[in-house]
Amino acid sequence: MDTPQATEQPFQIGLIGGGREARNLATTLRALLPDRSFLRFAKNTLEVPDAQLAAWMQTLDVVFIATPPAERFRVTEIALRQGVHCFVAWPPAPALRDLERLNRLAEEARVEVGVSRPLRFHPVLQSLQQKIPPVLLVYRQQVGGQGVVPWHARLAEAIDLCCALAHSSSVLRIEGEAVRGGPTWLEAVAFGLRFYSGTYAQVLMWRDGEGTTPELYLARTGWHRQVRLEAANNRLQQAEVAAFLKALAARQPAPVSLLETIQVLHIVERLMSRLR
Image (cartoon, rainbow, N blue to C red; front, side):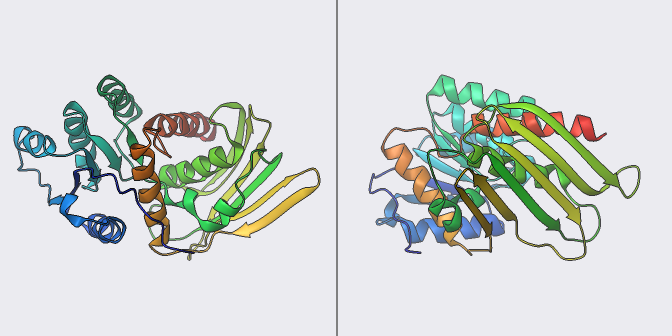
């Protein structure tokens, strides 16, 4: 896959964060931007006061936020109050009410908030983009890792991908079942989503020692595809960042918007209430 090209629009772009996610984003931005003079960096710490962050934000048009999760809501809120477009790592905020607050601020400031969802930009899925959504969608994944599995984030990722492929974030019906390994953790989850677009999605995720990449089966009359979403290294991040900057230059909505994220998390909450 060719390296995606970012817009040549001379945005003043900032990146805030000091961890691995921030370093990966810095590499991506350096590769995409034809003129690096538009790129500024800042390492965020808890000790930096809001006024200092706000003053830095005033010099920017776009900021990429890759701070620790506990800081993302605060940093994003400050950026939006300064009228700065934001690209935020997942999860953008700790709770739905916080996301809804950010969405209201973005609407008032007339700026875009993009949310990192690199799996949507997998080259296999890009080749499957069609105007007509599948009638049947099956998602299977073995979830690895020791200790407590972050099921909420895993379910959000799967549901987000289902919404993208179904061309809808509106669900008519949700049904599901979970197998528990104890009172506070899950071993396996299976659920179905009936979308208003007509797609019926089935998702099966189970815990095991080693994780696997998602497997998808998509079908409608006269057509079907079965794909495995193997890792595509940093190309996915390059593709989503380039798409975000291109949308800003064209004054179009972010490819993965904050509103879509809110809709996905509403579905997750509805599902979790059925699994309890």
